[in-house]
Length: 266
Ligand SMILES: [Fe+2]
Ligand SMILES: [Fe+2]
Image (cartoon, rainbow, N blue to C red; front, side):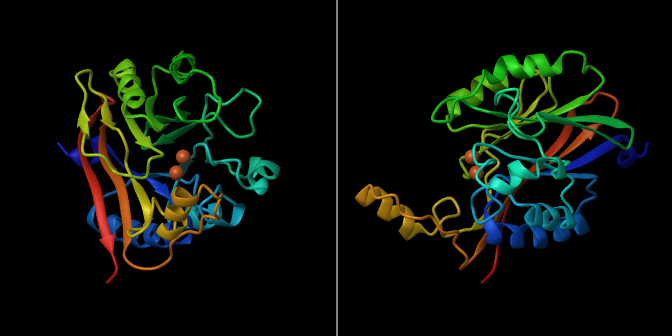
């Protein structure tokens, strides 16, 4: 049996931070596509435009680099342009548990190689802006979606909240990929019910930075409590964090996965 045709190969990329992140993502996608047969690429783009939000140009640039679907998070409304031109960000989801009238799509459906994919982004409620319950909202979204394979980006700060969410939806969705902390965790595994889970996929951007930002900016803010402007770090080695996984067309489960942590540059 040709396993190539019975699986859907997906690459999920952690938070892309500014131009540094975009550059490393472009290089990494073309490199990974030479090594692995990738059918669909998803990326968290909440920090892709100068570290805060996304613009239409950045969206188009990233789509041109090979990203098919975009997730986001607490920074999605940082650029006015996103709110004003929201209908043009066709393949981007905002957190589904934001208020129902929030700009942007709460989820998107795709059909790739005969598999119906449902991409959902939800946001946590610990150390995060006000939102509705992510557990209840995802339960509602999954109603009537039995023939879909669901991939969830759970954008949250607290590892406890992420763990509880993952166990609650274990067996009900194919994969739960954590984002937001920008630090890749080492707990990637298939949960007892069959769902692929990682607490945080990590980020794409400068390695020697505070989660993508110039480290001196961050240190100064901690030392002085003055709201220092955060600039995206552009120098030095670049980090690329992602998760590759194979979905079985028949069982709709992840059958193989590989966490990716690559460093580029001198
Ligand atoms: Fe982020
Ligand atoms: Fe975030």
